[in-house]
Amino acid sequence: MLQWKESRMSHAGVSCYDCHVVPKSHPSAIQCPGIKGTNIYISPLVSPKTCAKCHPTEVEQFTKSGHARLASRPVVDVPKLQKLQYYFEGGEFAGVPKKDPRTTAPRETGCIVCHGGKIILGPDKKPISGWPGGIGTRYPDGGVGSCVACHYRHTFSLEQARKPETCGRCHLGPDHPDIEIYLESKHGQLYLAHGEKWRWNSAPETWEPGDYTAPTCATCHMSGIGALKTTHNVNERLKWDMVHKKSVIRSGERGDGKKGRQLMVQVCANCHSTLHTKQFMSSLDNAVALYNAYWDGAVKMFNELKAKGLLKKDKWSDGYQELMYYLWHHVGRRARHGAAMNGPDYAHWHGFFQIFQVYKDLQAIYNYRIKHNKIEELSTVMSSAPY
Ligand code: HEC
Ligand code: HEC
Ligand code: HEC
Ligand code: HEC
Ligand code: HEC
Ligand code: HEC
Ligand code: HEC
Image 1 (cartoon, helix red, strand yellow):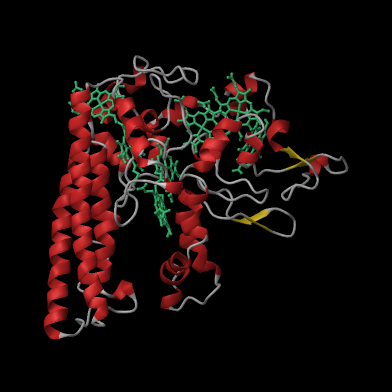
Image 2: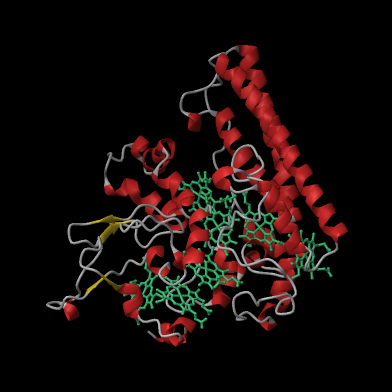
């Protein structure tokens, strides 16, 4: 309640009713004891459909971004990732019975908290799974995404959404260490040194250099700066797809890479010379191309092993395939993200240095299998370390 009073929206006269009161026909409409007998129905679940009543532009942009349906897709729609979640991580392979509630634990405590899943309602219309959920949550009313992933209730403070830690809640760790990369960049160092003196609460479209001296995640990926308008589509300013196995220029549902680069360069131009930014972007493009060369080499060996029947069916017991996973998902992402956001330790020591080592191990396994025409008995890969 106190938080709500502090939010600018409460000043604008937005009340509990605007967000929580729903028609009786709403899929998650319930009545708490206080309103039993009246014809008022509420929903504790608030999807972007509700916010869209007053913020249609933000919701439209957000819906097109990787933060909406694309974010919950791996968790909800991709069969091989179902197997990863329930069978491997959920312990079915180790004897925990299928459908046992324990098998859902990794998914509910991990994937869904960041990515979001599908909310399942019980017979009393109250959620039994998937709520509260991560950024791509699919609501029973058809709304997709969670605005409270970044705008914590009930202050909906711009200051909090603009701070890098808000993004770092999900963008961290061995496979996408963006907050770590940011904090080791000069931008992050300036944030640590002077951030508490920056003006964080400027109204939308007026938060400009001067309010801050270095960009946060939001500045580069979302906020209005100079001639650029704020966007809730985080794909808009990106050139490369560095999430997946091979980096390609973004197109279709992942964005428009050519335009994305132009927009990102425009962000930098507010504080840096053209020369500075050009140099930076050309090193980034070289880093992406080098990573792709390693990936192509790994795929070539993979295809040969496959043709000769020298791959195990279960990739998690097969050293070659496990290493291939670490190549793109851990060391390869770290190198690419490090290069993109000025984090030299991630670009190098946690990135390219480990990429070449993983690659040499891939070559060694490949050579062994080709020479002996058989798969080594035990996986030589120590699953989580050192990658
Ligand atoms: C601007 C919209 C908005 C307003 C105004 C608003 N809420 Fe919420 N509320 C939300 C959102 C969004 C959530 C998170 C729902 C979700 O994750 O699906 C939420 C969640 C909740 C929850 C359930 C989650 C929990 O922590 O238990 C309660 C209870 C709640 N609000 C009460 C209130 C009350 C009381 C008021 C008025 C003082 C209020 N809300 C005003 C948007 C709003
Ligand atoms: C009934 C209309 C209404 C609904 C529904 C609504 N908002 Fe707002 N919201 C407003 C108004 C009006 C403002 C502008 C307040 C101002 O500029 O002083 C605002 C401002 C904001 C701000 C900026 C706060 C700031 O400090 O400037 C955020 C963030 C926000 N809303 C998020 C949400 C989210 C998320 C939802 C859905 C959970 C939501 N709003 C639902 C009317 C609404
Ligand atoms: C609740 C977790 C969460 C938070 C908070 C979060 N993200 Fe994300 N973000 C994700 C997930 C999950 C994806 C992957 C989406 C997919 O599957 O394509 C993602 C993807 C992205 C992408 C790449 C888009 C794409 O489709 O490839 C960018 C850029 C990004 N986020 C920036 C940000 C920024 C900037 C912030 C903070 C303002 C932020 N994120 C906050 C979870 C989060
Ligand atoms: C700590 C938060 C977090 C957890 C937990 C998490 N992810 Fe992610 N995931 C992300 C972020 C952030 C990205 C985006 C990385 C990028 O943009 O490069 C991502 C990217 C992905 C992608 C690639 C994007 C796409 O749409 O194809 C897949 C697949 C994926 N995650 C699946 C999962 C699965 C399955 C789980 C659970 C077994 C899981 N993730 C757990 C945060 C998380
Ligand atoms: C990935 C984090 C993230 C998510 C998710 C997110 N926002 Fe925002 N939002 C921000 C940031 C950062 C700003 C501040 C932009 C700036 O610097 O002015 C913002 C600003 C806003 C504003 C103020 C007006 C504006 O456009 O600047 C509104 C309104 C708003 N968001 C609504 C929403 C709604 C509705 C949703 C859900 C559909 C949502 N946001 C989801 C990060 C997010
Ligand atoms: C100085 C501007 C800047 C800052 C600050 C910044 N980024 Fe980035 N980010 C970039 C650039 C540039 C790229 C690469 C764009 C391209 O594809 O060419 C990128 C790429 C990404 C990607 C990669 C998407 C993919 O394809 O895998 C994610 C995710 C991301 N940033 C999240 C964050 C988060 C989270 C933060 C804060 C902790 C942050 N960024 C801070 C500029 C920035
Ligand atoms: C709000 C202003 C601002 C924006 C926007 C900004 N930077 Fe910076 N950047 C700085 C400041 C300030 C420094 C520290 C310079 C120093 O050491 O005096 C810096 C440092 C750097 C450095 C470290 C090398 C050096 O000059 O010392 C790189 C690389 C860099 N920025 C790249 C970028 C890129 C790429 C973008 C756009 C994607 C960007 N910056 C956007 C303010 C900004």
